[in-house]
Image 1 (tube, rainbow, N blue to C red):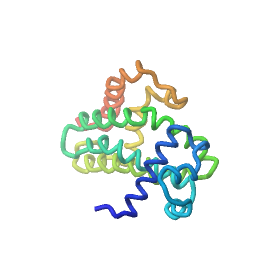
Image 2 (spheres, rainbow, N blue to C red):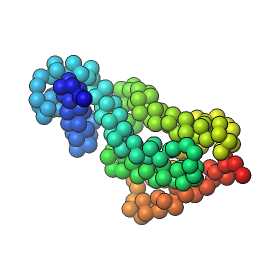
Image 3 (spheres, helix red, strand yellow):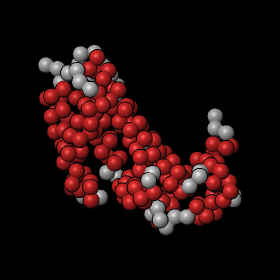
Length: 200
């Protein structure tokens, strides 16, 4: 059960997320977030030491909310290719969505300049990718995948399922036509991954 303090913190994060997405990082002020939520700036700074820290909390919230379905597909013991296909489709639908694309622009700009990009990586992507690595390692130990380093295998998988979106992903432009091909593109990535890591 959430305490009032936790509910207050979540309200601040949700409000900040809305403003960051609407206006961008630079144009969003702590004062405006405080005004929307209600209360004093001192209270807001009591929860978050800086705007960078608040933004990191926003990203973590968005990732946890939207990535939970993707990681839930990785259940050991079933059809590996099907699990990776379902994971890949869910994962790409999230990271190629307009909200995450907009947030990634902030990370590439403001957080790098503020020196907070490493904090974002440790708090968000790395934790999720560790789940992929753990799933692959469990399948390797069971003899259903070729033995290798789980983290490296996870990086190979993520690279392969994103491969055909890499260029548009980097510049932040993904068309509707591109998204219509998502299932097929993930399938090609999974096929290549299983050709190397699969056990005959």
